[in-house]
Image (cartoon, rainbow, N blue to C red; front, side):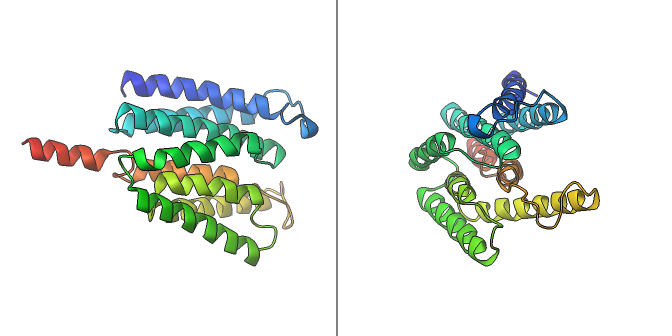
Length: 221
C-alpha cells in the first residue's frame, strides 16, 4: 500500500469517527447525544478502509482522485447522519450535488453523456421504486442517488444500486432474524447506496483509471 493510500485510510478513519460523533449532536432537533460505542468504531473502520482502498486503486490524475475523496468524505458524514437520525440533510446533499455536477466534464474515467445518463437513470429508477414500494424510498435517497449516478455514470450506476439492494436485503433479514427490527421498521437506504458506490468504484477497472493506465503502458511499449 502506498503512503498516500495509508494516509487516506487514516484520514478517513478519523472522518468516520468524527462523522458518527457529529451525527449524535447534529442536526440538533433530533440529536440523541449518544456516547461513543460500537457504531463509532465500525464507521471509523469502514470509512478508513473505503478511503484507503480508493486511493490505493486509483491511477487517476491527482485532481480527479481528490474530487472522489471529497465526495466520499461528504458521503461518510451523510451515512452517519442517516444511520443515527434517519435523515440526509440538505446542508450536505446540496454541496454533494454541486461538486458531482461540476466534476462531470472533468472526470477522466466517465464521459459526460454517460454521467448524465447515469444520474438521470438513477433518479428515475429510485423514483419509480418509491412509487411502487410506498415508504421504501425516502426523498433524501433521490437526492443522494443523483450525484452518485453522475460520478459513476451508466451502466456502473446500475451495478451500484443492485449491490445496495442486495446489502440492504441482507441487513434487513439479519435484523429481522435477530429481532432488532420488525416488518414495519424503517431501515435507511442511504448507507447502502454509499456502500454500493464504493464497491462499484473498487471492482470496475475503468472508474478509478486502471484501464486508461494499462492502455497507456501498452502504447508506450
